[in-house]
Image (cartoon, rainbow, N blue to C red; front, side, top):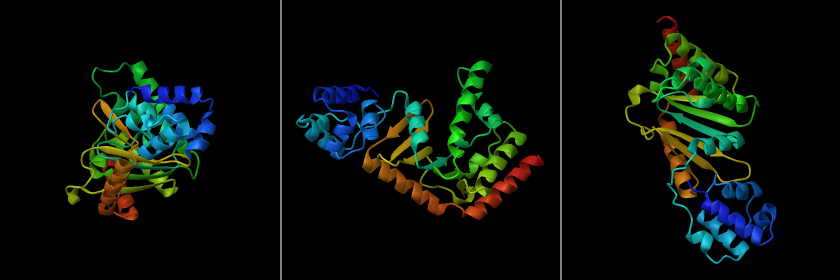
Length: 263
């Protein structure tokens, strides 16, 4: 996504002689939200844009030239990764593989080695370190609150082989047993569910609007539109309602890990 919008907002704020905090106060927003918009990481809602126009006396320019809601972010994952580090609540849905912040080193390496064109060992090493670093957010025993919804196919697909999968599922179970995360499984027997089209991450924050992120092959989107984020939240909740309860999910994960150990 081009950051012309954020750059233009910053230019107007500078011309008005306002700091980010002063503009935030005038527009009834938070300073960090202003900073994210100027950096191109967030898109303001229509109401936020109207308040910015009023605060900067720019007529309806910021309201009229809002970027399209479904524009793909150029460096989509980096923008989502930065928001992930600031979130107070994260809800993940995984259709194909374990979410990045929950991956073991061996599992992450197995995922990253399958690419086109192939990655070198050095590049894989660098990406594995970066991915494992993301899990640092779980070192705080309370924040962010993390909930995970897994399609059963995530557990059944033997990425890296049986030993790697047993270790990966054990890691998830350890996080569940320590109450650091909650995991619910959508079983095969359910058939169709509302999240069959791909992965989804929902994020809430202390001082800015919620966001959502989805990803496919060579593409990803970060969603700021309040109406669209709310719709994605509803879709997630509908799928969660079809998932196994927490204890049944843990029992299924334990059984699958045992199957891998005896494979």
